[in-house]
Image (cartoon, rainbow over all chains, first blue to last red; front, side, top):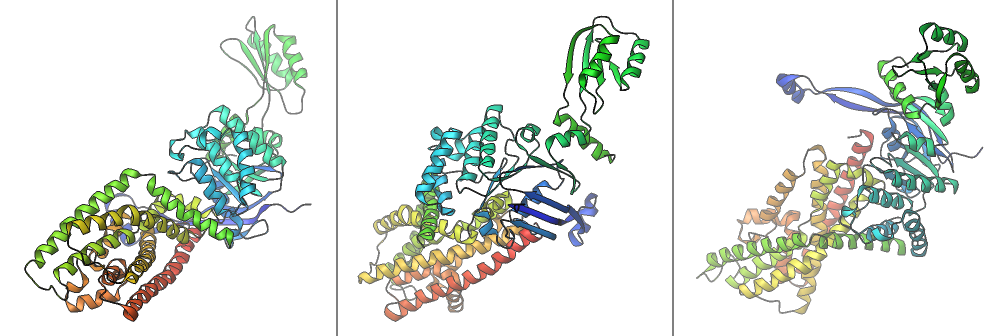
Length: 336
Length: 267
């Protein structure tokens, strides 16, 4: 098998955090003898990102996603474990590694506030030592795809969030990175801009760029990710494809049937026995049946229709968003 | 090498563009520098009034020293400390480190751009104004101008390195402003920008001449007066260059330490 563009093995990262004592006297004691504690941000994390692959790094806030990204880009030294990007240790050889890595933060700018977009790109190209002709070609292509042409003469500080996101993505691609790291790239963007960014990222992956994406926007994950890694409390709790994640999270489809006459309790009890699955009815007389994993929807629907008189029928797919929200909640309660 | 030239040339250019992006700032800086020049020059003129010499300086030489030292200090007064401190406080440092650049060199190169702008839009107008307002003793030898220019350039190198050290020292503080004002007071008092070094008590003057701050204003003024010529003038430039080199080593070591602190401890 090919070597991954970026990988970690047994990545550990701990931080010393200062804990504050309560109250004014506590603050005074803190001044003299601060209380420190070690906090593990990432524990034993194995991650591979192959060329042409888009890997989603998911997890609740504080799960360790950003720390992982920082270890991969050389901004943090791992406490233990190994990290390699293009065969190099990013912390020891940061400058070499970042020449081949493009990073876009949805919440932070890599451009220069005072400069016009084109000036900022010229400067980035000079910093990355992209030959002038190559740079012009790339900028033309990116400007066309992301419709940047009218923005090039504007100072970065005058761009709207959506315009800036487009400009930032282009900035992270000017040096044609082998690894593209996107840290919440679509945060706060409208659907049109999101779609445009996703299309470009897909396209880059098809051309062989390895992409690592951290996001809370699960539509990003649905549209982009070939594989997802779910982290929680510093550990990987799931790794696989998006459909596998749905199954893992207990994503079940439900059949919803609007009834003309509200069925009685014995009818519902009979239905529950026949489908061997939970049945609910709401105040408007809509019957909802969970389709058990592995059973065809048609089968369950036939059973339901044999008991109630239906006016309207729909099948509800679980959204990844809903599933993950449930899962985060269970994880926070410590039951997942 | 061509690539390196293009990279660093572009960063110097950034320093220039950055300055011009805030035109009003440039105007305000010029106005306040003008006020200081006129006030400080007038004070020293009044002090020297009716005296044939103040220390070793004639009244005309004293005015010249005050004007030239002030003009030079406007070019050597770095903003690197503030810039670096703010980058650290705002978290911008993370995106800086994702660029394949040596950050101290990048900030110094930007500061060279700033200094070039300051020389043209602040120092030269101040010099013209000073020449119109006060009697000045102009250099008799053309080579003096080159020595002064070289000395100001070395002053920019020294000032920039001091700025980097102040910026890094602020990493453990919440704000960089306190340290920056400390540095500015030290610079104003010890560089000759406001008080001619030669008018200080002997012991103080000797101490100041050993410190790097003299490179920021006193040395260019002294060269302009042709009080040091030939080998002695070169000696002053060599001393400035030595300070730039020593500070560069200290900056390098401090930067490694700061970087370790940031990336190892995550501070």
